[in-house]
Length: 311
Image 1 (cartoon, rainbow, N blue to C red):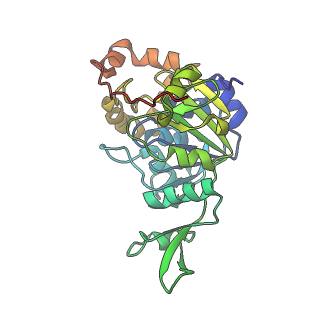
Image 2 (cartoon, rainbow, N blue to C red; image 1 turned 45 degrees about the vertical axis):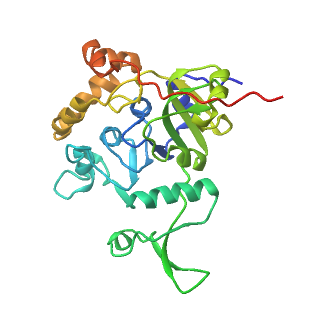
Image 3 (cartoon, rainbow, N blue to C red; image 1 turned 60 degrees about the vertical axis):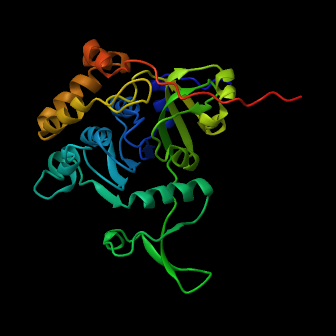
């Protein structure tokens, strides 16, 4: 059965007010298109979970969709801070001003967040790890708790499972049933997807099932856990998709200046998110010249393998 849907329909059916939403992808394959559609549909009171809440969560929080952020690192990679988020959390920076509530924070290490997704995906009550010794994170977050080993006197730390209501991932390709293939730099998309109640995959290209079957090792997310497949070329811009387009570093630098001022941030959202109906209109505003500069100059094939044919 085909699970292909428009971005509008996929978000409307699977993202609800009050949900825990994870948009994962580690610098690579970050689904900005889904975040923008969530903004356009004016979802509210979301808990946003992500290892690295960079520009997309800054934009979503600026738009007022979230009440809480669960994360392990926060910033504009290679540039600086996330100013829209800072206005919601820092005393004197506008937190709580204009009717917006102070943003609730729940912080972990990167490994702590991966452990939480892994526990959620495995239906475990917690995930043990060592990496919180000699840090202040257990003091800042009481959900990071010391536990005694059942096999000796050793003490480790435990983090609770994270089970998003919906996880959204971007990938290079999928078939209509949702079997999703990706390559290049990966984060914890698989763990976040298996931990979630609902999964939206957004892809650059829809392919026939035969393409997936011919290269099964690239299938990171199986269709059996996918609820909707959205075909959205350039859906990860300004992040990148290996083999399709490069990271738009100019955008990351530009966002620093845009996001420092609340009025300028809202003007950007009005023009590039609320002011367009879909991703195609957004990319038209970005412009053909900018898009051409981000596309590969040629191919870099990874080779092939022979799976063999047996009787």
